[in-house]
Every structure is written in structure tokens, then in C-alpha cells.
Image (cartoon, rainbow, N blue to C red; front, side, top):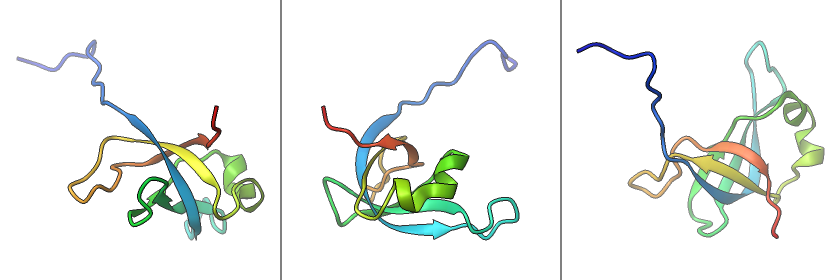
Length: 98
């Protein structure tokens, strides 16, 4: 009846694609003036808007060159909310079709 340090909690993650429609700029002390998150819509349902975060320092500094508006990105999330919005969306990479 106690916690175990040897067990790991796993959460199912899904990948999806989104289109960048805007940027949120940080006002925090550490990242002031850098990218905070992308404002996105789902590629398959453009009515669902949400923000994606989780970037490297390089992307935060050069986002306008590497990720212009209308760029398609791949992100991961932990399922959908009741309103079909991705839960905890995290940036993975630029979208590339094979």
C-alpha cells in the first residue's frame, strides 16, 4: 500500500496536423520577445482553433523564417476534449507528406 519508484505511467499520444494562423509572443523574463506558441487550426477541421507550444530555442528565435503563416506542422496530443480540441498539444516537426 505504498508508491513504487519502479513503475512508469504511460499516456497514449496521438499525432495530427495543424495549420499555423498566428503567433503568440512571450512576455516572460526568460523568453521576452520570442515565440510562446503557434495559433493553429486543425488541418482536417478548420473550425477548431488552439495553441501549440513546446519548441527548441532555435525555433523560438527564427520562427518567422522557418514557420511562416499557413505552414502545416505535426503535433502530438493526449486525445481530444469534449469540444474536439486537442488536449496538451505539443510541437513535433514540420509536416512532410511521404
